[in-house]
Structures are given as structure tokens and as C-alpha cells.
Length: 308
Image 1 (cartoon, rainbow, N blue to C red):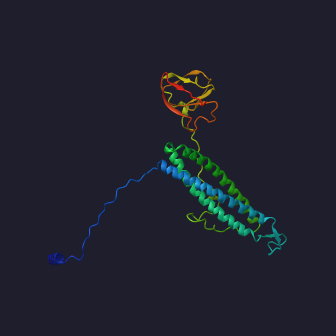
Image 2: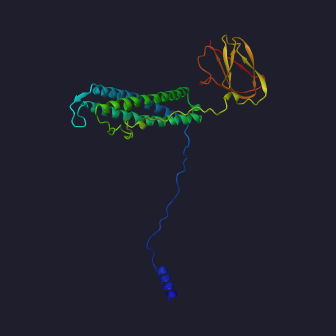
């Protein structure tokens, strides 16, 4: 019986007409190359966005500070009212000034806008710092290298501003609002198009930015690098310059070279970093344009040129 059933099913499957048409699909994709890391053009774009965001934050900070001070002005002096319950009987109570809430919500909205801009600026600065660490800043023009350095300075100042504004809004204004009996638990207003509206200035954790990395202390000093080569003599020729010049090798100051003189210096062969600056040059060794990388050998000479 089982053989008959199997034979019947096989004949049925063979005789059954095709119920659907199979349409093949193509899996080819257009080849492309995705850049894992950015380049100098990407770094320039991040720097421009960082500076634009910082300018916008300056304007929002002024509006935020004005709203905070106007709110504090509304809170002083507090208005005394009669006790309303047995719990408050025998001691004075205070009522929230009618204009304090309006100014506080203005400060809350401006603070939310400021925090959202700060998050975007933090992202741009992270991109700048990462690209700078990867060496993309080498491909920048001098003006953008100066802007990149300025972005680092602005971010350091921003860390201080965030701490100061956190103290002014959360610690000072929040304490005054609670003392005056005013409500402070309110959702921040929409911070603006393109921004997240979840930044709450009344939350102390919202005022935290990514700190700058602390300098490592376990790395060997720069002066100790490359000292495995044989000891050699090199010449620093300052005979074309009437003023003395400062000399350092691998970040280690080695003194001055007298004006109109040629000095022989004892060092080690190999790839080294030299800095020779005339006394009239106010830059410090290590700043852009002050370091010369060269492979030193016996008799190597560096000629100093002074501006006339």
C-alpha cells in the first residue's frame, strides 16, 4: 500500500503544471571605495564647522547669561506671605515672584541650545584631534594649521566655560529658585532645528564634556631617542647672524651660539630634531616651523640665517 501511495504522489508531482515563474535577480553592486580615515580636506571641513559652532555658541552664551541674571534679579528680594498650613505656622513663607518663571524658562531654553551646540562642537573637536594625531595636519596650509591650533585653545577655554555656566545655572540659580519656592522641574524647550532637544541644563551631568587626554608620563623622553648612534661632531654656523641663537636637539636645550661665530657641538649620529632660533625670534622650540629634522653625521653643518 505504501508503494502505491508513493507512486501516486510521484505521478501527481510530475503531471502538475508549473504554478509560478521564477524570476532571477541580480546581485551585482557598483564598486566603491569608502574612506576609513579622513584626509586634509575632511580636516579643513571639521575645523570650519568647529569655528562656526563656536561663534554660534558665543551668541547663545550671551543670551543664556542674560536670562540667568534677569531671573536672579526677579528673585531678590523674596515676597513674604502668610503661612498656609499648620506646618508653616509661626514662620514666614515666600512666594515665587510672578516674573521669575518666565525668565527661568528663557534661561532653560538658551541653556539647552548651548548644551546641544556644545555636543556638536565636541564631536568636531574629536575629529580634529584624531586627524591631527594621524598626521593629516601636515597637508594643511599655514592658515589652517593656525586654525587647528586655535581650535585646541578654544576647546580648553570651553571646558572652563562649561564649568562656570554649570555653577551659575545649576548651583546658584537653582538654589535661589528653590529657596524662593519656584518650580525648576521643566522640560527644556525645543533647542532649534537640527539639534537634539533632550539636553536639560537642570541635569548636572549634561554639563560634562570630554576632557583633554592627560599627557603620558611613562613614555621615554624625547632627548633619549636616537642616542644609540656613534658620537660625532657637528657645526652650527652662526657667522652670518650678528645676534646669538638658541640651540636644542631632540627637545633638549644646549645653550646659545654667539653671534658671528661657528660652534662645534658633540652629539650622536642618526635622525634627530634640531631647533635653532635667533634671539629676536619670539617663538618657542616645538612650535610650527621651528623644528628641522635631519640625519646627523660627522661634519654635518647647519647655517643660521637671520632676517635683515
